[in-house]
Length: 179
Image (cartoon, rainbow, N blue to C red; front, side, top):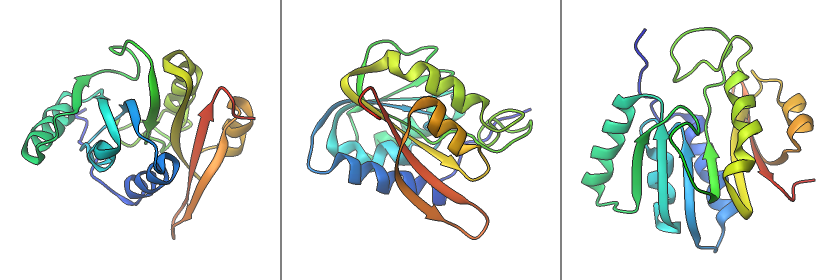
């Protein structure tokens, strides 16, 4: 089964808005985007970040995003094929992820496992190993997920909510300080 390049949608733009609000006037030294897809989220915050590593499981997505970044003249984003943190080393000040969250089996750009959140759970269980002290992770969840269960299990803090006609989107922050 071929995995598509995830096109920018409402969830992408909502995550961008949440990231910009969270970053505010700060300058971020290092960031990591898991599941970059088309690259739109990294492109949108590139002016606030010194160095971004953008990874995706799909080599075609990485090739597409890299070509687009070159056309845009963005030199502070490195692209790499990686299944979550598999080909990532080091620690980051900001990690962000618009995960595949639909339940079922199918295109990896959309489906997050049988329950729709297996990939999310794997990400949340590993993300602390890749955050600098004082760093934070921002993740987008959907009403298709058991978001309240994930919030409680991983100590997530809600930072944004967007109701669409067919689902609600939630932006959560994870940090070692999150209570």
